[in-house]
Image (cartoon, rainbow, N blue to C red; front, side, top):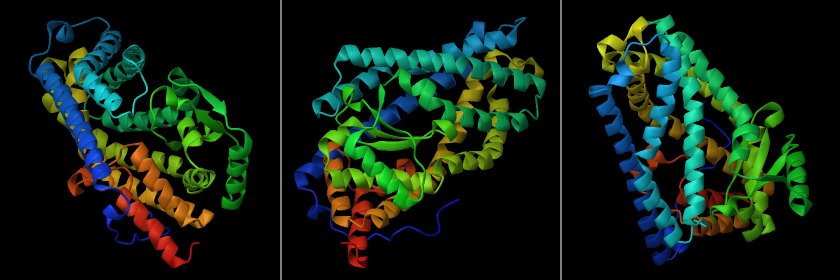
Length: 384
Protein backbone atom coordinates (compact mmCIF):
# COMPACT_ATOMS: atom_id res chain seq x y z
CA UNK A 1 0.00 0.00 0.00
CA UNK A 2 3.02 2.30 0.23
CA UNK A 3 3.36 4.73 -2.71
CA UNK A 4 6.11 3.58 -5.06
CA UNK A 5 6.02 6.69 -7.25
CA UNK A 6 4.91 10.30 -7.15
CA UNK A 7 7.17 11.20 -4.22
CA UNK A 8 9.98 13.75 -4.58
CA UNK A 9 13.26 12.79 -2.99
CA UNK A 10 14.06 15.66 -0.58
CA UNK A 11 17.31 17.55 -1.00
CA UNK A 12 19.56 17.54 2.08
CA UNK A 13 19.27 20.90 3.83
CA UNK A 14 20.69 22.66 6.87
CA UNK A 15 17.66 23.42 9.03
CA UNK A 16 19.47 26.34 10.68
CA UNK A 17 19.33 28.12 7.34
CA UNK A 18 15.53 28.34 7.67
CA UNK A 19 14.97 28.77 11.41
CA UNK A 20 16.79 30.67 14.11
CA UNK A 21 18.50 28.81 16.93
CA UNK A 22 16.02 30.37 19.38
CA UNK A 23 13.01 29.14 17.37
CA UNK A 24 14.47 25.62 17.12
CA UNK A 25 15.22 25.50 20.86
CA UNK A 26 11.74 26.80 21.73
CA UNK A 27 10.04 24.19 19.54
CA UNK A 28 12.21 21.35 20.86
CA UNK A 29 11.55 22.33 24.45
CA UNK A 30 7.80 22.50 23.90
CA UNK A 31 7.45 19.36 21.77
CA UNK A 32 9.72 17.29 24.02
CA UNK A 33 7.41 18.18 26.89
CA UNK A 34 4.36 17.21 24.83
CA UNK A 35 5.94 13.84 24.10
CA UNK A 36 6.81 13.14 27.74
CA UNK A 37 3.31 14.11 28.87
CA UNK A 38 1.79 11.79 26.26
CA UNK A 39 4.05 8.92 27.35
CA UNK A 40 3.17 9.54 31.01
CA UNK A 41 -0.55 9.49 30.14
CA UNK A 42 -0.07 6.22 28.26
CA UNK A 43 1.74 4.76 31.27
CA UNK A 44 -1.02 5.81 33.68
CA UNK A 45 -3.68 4.20 31.52
CA UNK A 46 -1.61 1.04 31.22
CA UNK A 47 -1.14 0.87 35.00
CA UNK A 48 -4.88 1.30 35.54
CA UNK A 49 -5.66 -1.53 33.11
CA UNK A 50 -3.00 -3.79 34.64
CA UNK A 51 -4.45 -3.16 38.11
CA UNK A 52 -7.97 -3.97 36.90
CA UNK A 53 -6.76 -7.16 35.22
CA UNK A 54 -4.69 -8.28 38.22
CA UNK A 55 -7.31 -7.43 40.86
CA UNK A 56 -10.66 -6.75 39.19
CA UNK A 57 -13.34 -5.16 41.39
CA UNK A 58 -16.07 -7.52 42.55
CA UNK A 59 -18.73 -5.69 40.51
CA UNK A 60 -16.82 -6.47 37.31
CA UNK A 61 -16.54 -10.21 37.88
CA UNK A 62 -19.93 -10.81 39.44
CA UNK A 63 -22.10 -13.35 37.55
CA UNK A 64 -25.04 -11.52 36.00
CA UNK A 65 -28.26 -12.45 34.30
CA UNK A 66 -27.66 -9.88 31.55
CA UNK A 67 -23.92 -9.86 30.95
CA UNK A 68 -24.20 -7.93 27.67
CA UNK A 69 -26.11 -5.06 29.27
CA UNK A 70 -23.68 -5.11 32.17
CA UNK A 71 -20.84 -5.08 29.64
CA UNK A 72 -22.20 -1.87 28.12
CA UNK A 73 -22.26 -0.21 31.54
CA UNK A 74 -18.77 -1.50 32.31
CA UNK A 75 -17.50 -0.23 28.96
CA UNK A 76 -18.78 3.27 29.69
CA UNK A 77 -17.30 3.15 33.21
CA UNK A 78 -13.94 1.95 31.90
CA UNK A 79 -13.90 4.73 29.31
CA UNK A 80 -14.60 7.29 32.02
CA UNK A 81 -11.88 5.89 34.27
CA UNK A 82 -9.27 5.93 31.48
CA UNK A 83 -10.18 9.54 30.66
CA UNK A 84 -10.20 10.77 34.26
CA UNK A 85 -6.91 9.16 35.28
CA UNK A 86 -5.00 11.50 32.97
CA UNK A 87 -6.84 14.75 33.81
CA UNK A 88 -3.89 16.18 35.82
CA UNK A 89 -1.58 15.57 32.86
CA UNK A 90 -4.16 17.05 30.49
CA UNK A 91 -4.22 20.16 32.67
CA UNK A 92 -0.42 20.43 32.56
CA UNK A 93 -0.49 20.09 28.77
CA UNK A 94 -3.12 22.84 28.51
CA UNK A 95 -1.15 25.17 30.79
CA UNK A 96 1.97 24.70 28.66
CA UNK A 97 -0.02 25.36 25.46
CA UNK A 98 -1.39 28.58 26.96
CA UNK A 99 2.09 29.66 28.06
CA UNK A 100 3.48 29.39 24.52
CA UNK A 101 0.42 31.04 22.96
CA UNK A 102 -0.82 27.91 21.20
CA UNK A 103 -4.10 27.56 23.13
CA UNK A 104 -6.78 30.26 23.07
CA UNK A 105 -9.02 28.59 25.67
CA UNK A 106 -9.51 29.68 29.25
CA UNK A 107 -9.85 27.03 31.93
CA UNK A 108 -13.65 27.07 31.79
CA UNK A 109 -13.77 26.38 28.04
CA UNK A 110 -11.04 23.76 28.41
CA UNK A 111 -12.97 21.96 31.19
CA UNK A 112 -16.18 22.05 29.13
CA UNK A 113 -14.37 20.47 26.18
CA UNK A 114 -12.88 17.82 28.46
CA UNK A 115 -16.31 16.92 29.87
CA UNK A 116 -17.81 16.78 26.38
CA UNK A 117 -15.05 14.50 25.05
CA UNK A 118 -15.29 12.26 28.10
CA UNK A 119 -19.07 11.95 27.82
CA UNK A 120 -18.98 11.22 24.08
CA UNK A 121 -16.24 8.65 24.64
CA UNK A 122 -18.31 6.87 27.29
CA UNK A 123 -21.42 6.89 25.12
CA UNK A 124 -19.50 5.38 22.24
CA UNK A 125 -17.72 2.83 24.45
CA UNK A 126 -20.97 1.39 25.84
CA UNK A 127 -22.35 -0.17 22.60
CA UNK A 128 -18.87 -1.23 21.47
CA UNK A 129 -18.32 -3.06 24.77
CA UNK A 130 -21.74 -4.71 24.54
CA UNK A 131 -21.00 -5.92 21.01
CA UNK A 132 -17.58 -7.20 22.10
CA UNK A 133 -19.05 -9.22 24.97
CA UNK A 134 -21.81 -10.62 22.75
CA UNK A 135 -19.35 -11.72 20.04
CA UNK A 136 -16.92 -13.29 22.54
CA UNK A 137 -19.76 -15.24 24.19
CA UNK A 138 -21.09 -16.38 20.82
CA UNK A 139 -17.76 -17.68 19.50
CA UNK A 140 -15.32 -18.03 22.43
CA UNK A 141 -12.31 -19.21 20.37
CA UNK A 142 -13.11 -17.75 16.97
CA UNK A 143 -14.68 -14.42 17.85
CA UNK A 144 -11.76 -12.65 16.21
CA UNK A 145 -13.14 -13.63 12.77
CA UNK A 146 -16.45 -11.74 13.01
CA UNK A 147 -14.70 -9.24 15.31
CA UNK A 148 -12.30 -8.16 12.57
CA UNK A 149 -15.23 -7.61 10.22
CA UNK A 150 -17.02 -5.52 12.84
CA UNK A 151 -13.90 -3.39 13.29
CA UNK A 152 -13.86 -2.57 9.60
CA UNK A 153 -17.59 -1.81 9.61
CA UNK A 154 -17.22 0.45 12.65
CA UNK A 155 -14.23 2.14 11.03
CA UNK A 156 -16.21 2.83 7.85
CA UNK A 157 -19.17 4.05 9.90
CA UNK A 158 -16.95 6.38 11.92
CA UNK A 159 -15.28 7.82 8.79
CA UNK A 160 -18.62 8.27 7.03
CA UNK A 161 -20.74 9.59 9.88
CA UNK A 162 -18.04 11.40 11.85
CA UNK A 163 -18.10 14.62 9.80
CA UNK A 164 -21.87 15.06 10.17
CA UNK A 165 -22.53 13.48 13.58
CA UNK A 166 -19.45 13.77 15.80
CA UNK A 167 -17.48 16.76 14.50
CA UNK A 168 -20.35 19.27 14.93
CA UNK A 169 -20.47 18.37 18.64
CA UNK A 170 -17.09 20.05 19.11
CA UNK A 171 -16.86 22.74 16.43
CA UNK A 172 -18.92 24.92 14.12
CA UNK A 173 -18.51 24.42 10.38
CA UNK A 174 -19.43 26.91 7.66
CA UNK A 175 -19.14 26.62 3.86
CA UNK A 176 -16.02 28.20 2.36
CA UNK A 177 -16.87 31.23 0.25
CA UNK A 178 -15.23 33.96 -1.81
CA UNK A 179 -11.82 33.84 -3.46
CA UNK A 180 -10.69 30.91 -1.34
CA UNK A 181 -13.57 28.77 -2.63
CA UNK A 182 -12.84 29.83 -6.21
CA UNK A 183 -9.24 28.70 -5.68
CA UNK A 184 -10.43 25.32 -4.41
CA UNK A 185 -12.65 24.78 -7.44
CA UNK A 186 -9.94 25.90 -9.87
CA UNK A 187 -7.35 23.62 -8.29
CA UNK A 188 -9.84 20.74 -8.17
CA UNK A 189 -10.48 21.09 -11.91
CA UNK A 190 -6.75 21.18 -12.58
CA UNK A 191 -6.25 18.11 -10.38
CA UNK A 192 -9.08 16.21 -12.06
CA UNK A 193 -11.01 15.64 -8.85
CA UNK A 194 -14.54 16.50 -7.77
CA UNK A 195 -14.92 18.39 -4.52
CA UNK A 196 -18.39 19.70 -3.73
CA UNK A 197 -18.08 20.43 -0.02
CA UNK A 198 -15.35 22.65 1.46
CA UNK A 199 -15.89 23.69 5.07
CA UNK A 200 -14.21 26.15 7.40
CA UNK A 201 -13.89 25.03 11.03
CA UNK A 202 -13.69 27.53 13.89
CA UNK A 203 -10.40 26.14 15.20
CA UNK A 204 -9.48 29.58 16.57
CA UNK A 205 -11.85 28.99 19.49
CA UNK A 206 -9.24 26.56 20.82
CA UNK A 207 -5.88 27.19 19.16
CA UNK A 208 -3.71 29.47 17.08
CA UNK A 209 -2.43 26.45 15.13
CA UNK A 210 -3.30 26.14 11.43
CA UNK A 211 -4.21 23.01 9.51
CA UNK A 212 -6.51 21.40 6.95
CA UNK A 213 -7.72 17.86 6.35
CA UNK A 214 -9.88 15.59 4.21
CA UNK A 215 -12.60 13.55 5.88
CA UNK A 216 -15.70 11.52 5.12
CA UNK A 217 -16.81 9.10 2.43
CA UNK A 218 -19.40 9.40 -0.32
CA UNK A 219 -21.87 12.18 0.40
CA UNK A 220 -20.02 13.17 3.60
CA UNK A 221 -16.64 13.64 1.86
CA UNK A 222 -15.30 17.13 2.44
CA UNK A 223 -12.19 19.26 2.68
CA UNK A 224 -11.98 21.11 6.01
CA UNK A 225 -9.82 24.22 6.47
CA UNK A 226 -8.95 25.88 9.79
CA UNK A 227 -10.10 29.49 10.03
CA UNK A 228 -6.62 30.31 11.33
CA UNK A 229 -5.21 29.17 7.99
CA UNK A 230 -7.48 31.55 6.11
CA UNK A 231 -6.65 34.50 8.33
CA UNK A 232 -2.89 34.23 8.73
CA UNK A 233 -1.49 32.83 5.50
CA UNK A 234 -1.13 34.23 2.00
CA UNK A 235 -3.29 33.15 -0.90
CA UNK A 236 -0.36 31.25 -2.48
CA UNK A 237 0.27 29.40 0.79
CA UNK A 238 -3.40 28.52 1.18
CA UNK A 239 -3.49 27.22 -2.38
CA UNK A 240 -0.64 24.84 -1.54
CA UNK A 241 -2.47 23.49 1.50
CA UNK A 242 -5.62 23.00 -0.56
CA UNK A 243 -3.61 21.29 -3.30
CA UNK A 244 -2.12 18.94 -0.68
CA UNK A 245 -5.60 17.95 0.51
CA UNK A 246 -6.77 17.52 -3.09
CA UNK A 247 -3.85 15.13 -3.50
CA UNK A 248 -5.41 12.94 -0.82
CA UNK A 249 -8.73 13.07 -2.67
CA UNK A 250 -7.08 12.33 -6.03
CA UNK A 251 -5.33 9.27 -4.63
CA UNK A 252 -8.39 8.11 -2.65
CA UNK A 253 -6.35 8.06 0.55
CA UNK A 254 -9.37 7.91 2.90
CA UNK A 255 -10.89 4.76 1.33
CA UNK A 256 -7.38 3.34 0.95
CA UNK A 257 -7.00 3.81 4.69
CA UNK A 258 -10.08 1.65 5.19
CA UNK A 259 -8.59 -0.93 2.83
CA UNK A 260 -5.47 -0.97 4.99
CA UNK A 261 -7.68 -1.53 8.05
CA UNK A 262 -9.39 -4.40 6.23
CA UNK A 263 -6.02 -6.03 5.55
CA UNK A 264 -4.55 -5.74 9.04
CA UNK A 265 -7.71 -6.16 11.16
CA UNK A 266 -7.77 -10.00 11.09
CA UNK A 267 -4.16 -10.28 12.25
CA UNK A 268 -4.57 -7.62 14.92
CA UNK A 269 -7.85 -9.02 16.19
CA UNK A 270 -6.42 -12.53 16.39
CA UNK A 271 -3.51 -11.22 18.45
CA UNK A 272 -5.90 -9.32 20.73
CA UNK A 273 -8.06 -12.43 21.14
CA UNK A 274 -5.22 -14.69 22.17
CA UNK A 275 -3.55 -12.13 24.41
CA UNK A 276 -6.86 -11.10 25.97
CA UNK A 277 -7.71 -14.73 26.61
CA UNK A 278 -4.43 -15.21 28.44
CA UNK A 279 -4.92 -12.08 30.54
CA UNK A 280 -8.61 -12.46 31.41
CA UNK A 281 -9.68 -13.94 34.75
CA UNK A 282 -10.51 -17.63 34.41
CA UNK A 283 -14.14 -17.15 35.26
CA UNK A 284 -14.58 -14.45 32.65
CA UNK A 285 -13.40 -16.31 29.54
CA UNK A 286 -15.22 -17.85 26.61
CA UNK A 287 -18.94 -18.34 26.88
CA UNK A 288 -18.77 -17.05 30.46
CA UNK A 289 -17.38 -13.71 29.25
CA UNK A 290 -18.88 -10.67 30.89
CA UNK A 291 -17.80 -7.24 32.14
CA UNK A 292 -14.75 -8.81 33.79
CA UNK A 293 -13.33 -9.55 30.34
CA UNK A 294 -13.18 -5.91 29.25
CA UNK A 295 -10.02 -4.71 31.07
CA UNK A 296 -8.05 -7.65 29.64
CA UNK A 297 -9.40 -7.01 26.13
CA UNK A 298 -8.63 -3.29 26.31
CA UNK A 299 -5.12 -3.96 27.66
CA UNK A 300 -4.52 -6.54 24.93
CA UNK A 301 -5.81 -4.06 22.34
CA UNK A 302 -3.38 -1.41 23.58
CA UNK A 303 -0.43 -3.81 23.54
CA UNK A 304 -1.22 -4.93 20.00
CA UNK A 305 -2.18 -1.51 18.65
CA UNK A 306 1.07 0.17 19.69
CA UNK A 307 3.43 -1.74 17.36
CA UNK A 308 0.78 -1.77 14.63
CA UNK A 309 0.64 2.02 14.89
CA UNK A 310 4.41 2.22 14.46
CA UNK A 311 4.02 0.27 11.21
CA UNK A 312 1.07 2.31 9.94
CA UNK A 313 2.97 5.53 10.67
CA UNK A 314 5.58 4.50 8.09
CA UNK A 315 2.81 4.25 5.51
CA UNK A 316 1.24 7.54 6.64
CA UNK A 317 4.48 9.47 6.20
CA UNK A 318 4.90 8.14 2.67
CA UNK A 319 1.29 9.00 1.79
CA UNK A 320 1.71 12.53 3.16
CA UNK A 321 4.95 12.96 1.20
CA UNK A 322 3.07 11.99 -1.97
CA UNK A 323 0.41 14.61 -1.21
CA UNK A 324 3.18 17.20 -0.76
CA UNK A 325 4.62 16.26 -4.14
CA UNK A 326 1.18 16.47 -5.72
CA UNK A 327 0.76 20.00 -4.31
CA UNK A 328 4.15 21.09 -5.61
CA UNK A 329 3.47 19.72 -9.07
CA UNK A 330 -0.04 21.17 -9.21
CA UNK A 331 0.88 24.70 -8.11
CA UNK A 332 4.46 24.87 -9.45
CA UNK A 333 5.28 27.24 -6.61
CA UNK A 334 8.06 25.74 -4.44
CA UNK A 335 8.95 29.14 -2.95
CA UNK A 336 5.46 29.48 -1.49
CA UNK A 337 5.66 25.85 -0.30
CA UNK A 338 8.91 26.51 1.56
CA UNK A 339 7.57 29.79 2.98
CA UNK A 340 4.46 27.99 4.19
CA UNK A 341 6.44 25.24 5.88
CA UNK A 342 8.54 27.83 7.69
CA UNK A 343 5.53 29.87 8.81
CA UNK A 344 3.37 26.97 9.94
CA UNK A 345 6.28 25.45 11.84
CA UNK A 346 6.67 28.67 13.80
CA UNK A 347 2.93 29.13 14.30
CA UNK A 348 2.33 25.53 15.43
CA UNK A 349 5.58 25.48 17.44
CA UNK A 350 6.62 22.27 15.68
CA UNK A 351 10.06 20.74 15.99
CA UNK A 352 11.54 21.07 12.48
CA UNK A 353 13.96 18.20 13.03
CA UNK A 354 12.77 15.75 15.73
CA UNK A 355 14.93 12.85 16.96
CA UNK A 356 14.97 9.91 14.55
CA UNK A 357 13.51 7.43 17.05
CA UNK A 358 10.68 9.79 18.00
CA UNK A 359 9.88 10.42 14.34
CA UNK A 360 10.00 6.70 13.49
CA UNK A 361 7.67 5.78 16.35
CA UNK A 362 5.20 8.65 16.40
CA UNK A 363 5.59 10.76 13.25
CA UNK A 364 2.62 10.60 10.88
CA UNK A 365 4.03 13.22 8.47
CA UNK A 366 7.47 13.87 7.01
CA UNK A 367 9.64 16.14 9.13
CA UNK A 368 9.82 19.83 8.29
CA UNK A 369 13.41 19.25 7.18
CA UNK A 370 12.16 16.68 4.66
CA UNK A 371 9.26 18.85 3.50
CA UNK A 372 11.43 21.89 2.91
CA UNK A 373 13.93 19.58 1.21
CA UNK A 374 11.13 18.46 -1.14
CA UNK A 375 10.42 22.09 -1.98
CA UNK A 376 14.08 22.68 -2.72
CA UNK A 377 14.12 19.56 -4.91
CA UNK A 378 11.16 20.93 -6.87
CA UNK A 379 12.98 24.25 -7.36
CA UNK A 380 15.98 22.43 -8.70
CA UNK A 381 13.78 20.34 -11.00
CA UNK A 382 12.37 23.44 -12.63
CA UNK A 383 9.60 24.78 -10.44
CA UNK A 384 9.46 28.57 -10.49
